[in-house]
Amino acid sequence: MLSGEKTPPIAQVINAGLVPRFVQLLKEISQPTLQFEAAWVLTNIASGTPEQTRVVVEHGALPLFVELLQSPNEDVREQAVWALGNIAGDCPNFRDLVLQSGGLGPIMYLLSAAAGAKASLVRNATWTLSNLCRGKPPPPLEWVTPALPTFLNLLNSSDTEVLTDTCWALSYLSD
Image 1: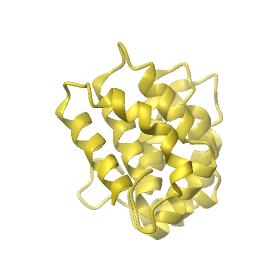
Image 2 (image 1 turned 180 degrees about the vertical axis):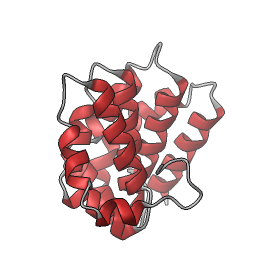
Image 3 (image 1 turned 120 degrees about the vertical axis):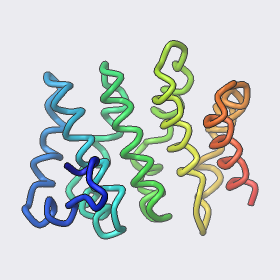
Image 4 (image 1 turned 90 degrees about the vertical axis):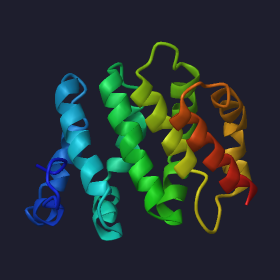
């Protein structure tokens, strides 16, 4: 419903008070399919307006998404990295919250262990890494320079989307 509509009913889902329940479902480690679906809903909400993204953050989803980057389930990891990309891309304050929540390290690990991973996971993780470097004011360099070796590795990719987002990230850092 939220991902298939031209104008998804994000406000209606928020106003119905459902966000806390979806955040709670992220904790269901014995049910990765349920985690994935809840993460997908929250990812879609976080892609909305800044106020809608704020609702996801204020209900505590951010640290749970960081934890889910280490899920044994690849689909859950991919949805978590996508959600973090939406949150980080919303504004510099949320970008900084993702960085302060420890999101950078697990994302770099996902990309270092990407051999055999789905192309979409690598693309989403690279895009999210790019969002962690984007915005005015820029993030403190000491927060993002640990990613430079990861960017160096990504520059060896043959995937155009990965290369494009890597170049964007480096341009944000050098701006």
